[in-house]
Structure formats: structure tokens, C-alpha cells
Length: 365
Image 1 (cartoon, rainbow, N blue to C red):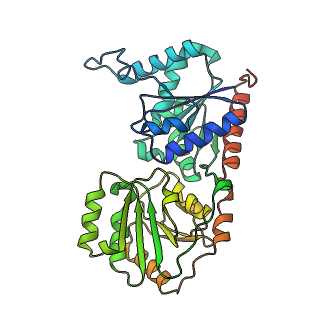
Image 2 (image 1 turned 90 degrees about the vertical axis):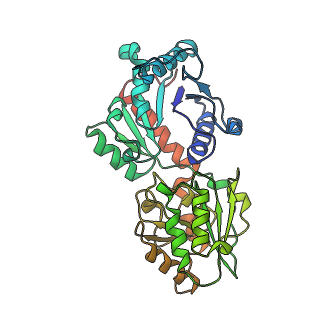
Image 3 (image 1 turned 60 degrees about the vertical axis):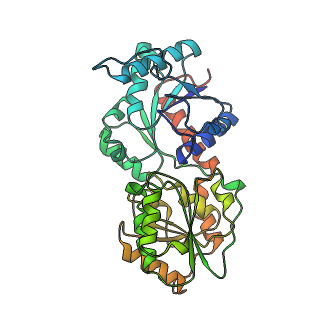
């Protein structure tokens, strides 16, 4: 069975890229043929080493087509993907990945197959609202949701009876070793992009400016707002309590100890970093937004109201003062077993097989 994963441009660094690598290899281990298509090569080519294959289909990148005034790129991109299918063969199923745009693009590409079109499942990696709406999702035959909240946003957008399958996002829990905790200093960590519109690191930094006690924050990641955030830390007089490690190819390997991971996002599609931390026995504090609210509970951490600096500061102070006891490592680890690679890909495989059966697609070819 051939599965095409079709997306725009994954840069080569980030949660989406990790998920694509993990899922594609697990599907291959289960004897599926997986082909990944995106517009052009990733910005960070080292990602290619983690993939079974990657094909490019943007005619403007391939220099097969010049853009003309008024021309809509999606038609040319769909045509180029269609040419790839003629050359390589039709897939049994298509995962239209990352944004709603690709449900329409792939539908246009396979329209000429008539009643022999392979089924399309959308596989969004964030809430519909983050992509400007979900009108294009109506071109998909079913949907895979990385979180229940993303599933609800898809349901609001499509308003029809097309199946929505919850899958979650995978973490290779089986190979993860717990991190030790620092007995002297509360080691806080943040792992992610330094992009303040979504990640709202300004909330975390301001909260820390109200906190007193022995703590240290390690920030792992890079992004357009790095300088702004470093300036903010200077303004709040907390720079001496922060280490900016920048982007790390293997961020968790750069951490020797951690007591708490903090995520202060305005929104999340899922909150992969929370699962990665919990799988290492690290409790978490997160803003109460869709995605994290399915992961964080009283057994593994705390939620605070989005943007509420004082609520976050109070939580951190209570931890430092030992008025709040950190959840034990084993409770944290057990709380995320449902996000193991095997269980998530089991659910993705079920969604694919169920959709193919409903559409009477041959699963054996």
C-alpha cells in the first residue's frame, strides 16, 4: 500500500519534522510504502537524513514554470504533483498534511482519476483557526486530528458527516530515559521557537521577575524574537538567571537536569514538548489552551490562564517555596503512555484503513 504525505515546506527543524520522520518510519516498518512530497528542499538539509525519501513538486522551485500576473500557484502546484503521480504511480491514500490548503491541492491533482480517486485524509498540525479557516477541508474524505481540540475545530469548519479520527502526536517514549532533578536549584526549561506571538515567552519572563528563590531558566530554541526576549530579560533584571542555548539538534541531550518545563503559549495545536518532558519524568506548567489542556492534569503538573502573569508567578513561587510538591517522575511518565509511537501510529493506521474500506479502496495493492 502506497501512502503519500503531501505538504508545503517543512524547514527541517521543529515538531512537525519530528512527527513526519517518526510516523513515516513506523509505517514503513509496518510494510507500507511512504512517499513524502513538499514544495522544495528544507532549509536545514540534515532533516533529509531522517526521512525515507522526499520529493519536490513546486514548479516555480523546479523552474519548470514562470509565474504570470493573476496566475494562482495552486493550479500549477497541483499539476506538478499530478505529473509526479503519472511518473511514480498512483498512491492508495493521501495524507494532506499541515494546513487545509493541501486538501484542495491534492484533490485537484487527482481529479482526473474520476471514481478511481484515492481517498484524502487531512492531517492538520494545528487548529483550523491558525490557518485562516478550514474551507478547503471539505475536499478531504476524512480527517486525522492530532488533538481532540483540533478535531473540534475541524468539526466546526466542515460541518458534515465526514469522519474525524483522533490520533495524537507520537513520542518515542520507549527509548527515553528519565532526567534527574536538581536538589539545590529549581531548574526550569523552555524548549521551542522564540516566536512571541504564539509562544508568549514575555509572559514567562515577566512572571519570573516577580519570583524570589533559587531557580534557573534554560531556553533552548531560536527564532525571530530572540533579541526582543533577551532585551526583555535585561529590562526585568533576570538575565543572570537565564541561559540561552539557541537551537539544538537534540535539545534533550543538552539538558543534564530539570525540575519543571514551562510553556506559556497563546495557542498550541498539540503541545509536543509537554509530552517529551513528561516522558522524561519532568512535570510541567502550561497555559490553559487547547492541546495542553488534554495533556496536563493534577498528576503531572498545572495549568494557568493564558496571559495571566500573576497566576504563573504564584505557581512558580509556590513550587520554589515547596508549598506545591512536584509530581513524582513515574506519575509523569505514566500520564503520557498513550502518546507512544506505537499507539499513535496504530490510530493513524486505523484511520487510513477505515477510510479506504469505506471508499472500497484496495488495501492490498
